[in-house]
Length: 171
Length: 213
Image 1: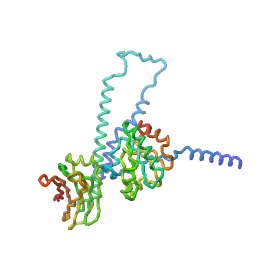
Image 2: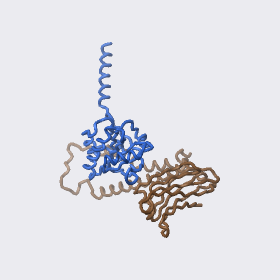
Image 3: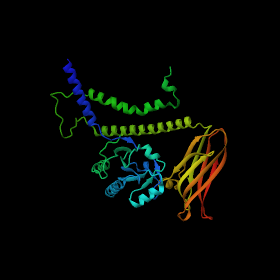
Image 4: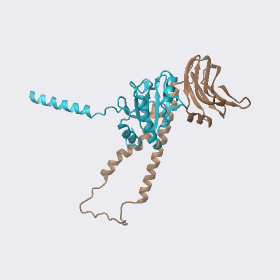
């Protein structure tokens, strides 16, 4: 009897470990909170106006070491998939808008650079590290979240293609 | 004896039930119809490939049932829209009763001398709204749209509203202008309109607050 109990516990433990391993690592699948932010250059941007298009939202700061290479990678993705309907938005969480403007000029990108000076938007998205990049599907649901991986991670391309192809079911 | 649903204000559960009735019917009817159908016997003649006079399928009936289903779907959509409208009105009545309601609207005419970027609204020296406009929203305003910028509650008595308009003025210069109005809140709902117009002779934008009594 004790042997049977040990076996059951052991098997149960294996099943639990399998369940944890099989769970998606970081797929929030939550509706993206809507926002409107001023752009460093150009007009204001409201997220809900891009409903129907996949959106890549990347939070950055001039104090973050990897942000420059992340923005450069996003620029490449934007140049490739822009014609397919991809939208890329960079969001600066800089306290000083002038500093953000300077950084945006030093790292030019063809996608809008938005200023979240009050950090209300980054709080709404629960940003706790930089750079953080969120991939939002056509129905406005956050499908993928990248926080600590290397900029230019090959999984970005697969995920962007999945969003463009609508391979992820709408909720 | 009257049921509880019949006594509910605005008859919403009844409407919901009516709206969902076709779906319930389809869900319940499908298996029943399938179960009612006679099982094919072993010695029954095999259906011929070509259409024969005794073939059970009638194209006219199928088209009729499709049309009926379309009508049901259209009716269902209409009921959902009506229900949404009723819920919206109910929410408004509960959150902003007419005796305390204050609503501020924005309208824009021509817009040659002013490109709207944002409006900050203060009532009794308290920030109540700070709205950033996207080009699409400005375009909608220029086409004649009226936006409800703010709705809130105020007690009866004198109040002051100040609106700050930010944007680009003539010659693409940054432009910031304020307009204020003192108004008396009575027992009914109060409606105020922020109007942005062009003053052609002065070549400047004009900002006016209109009190709709």
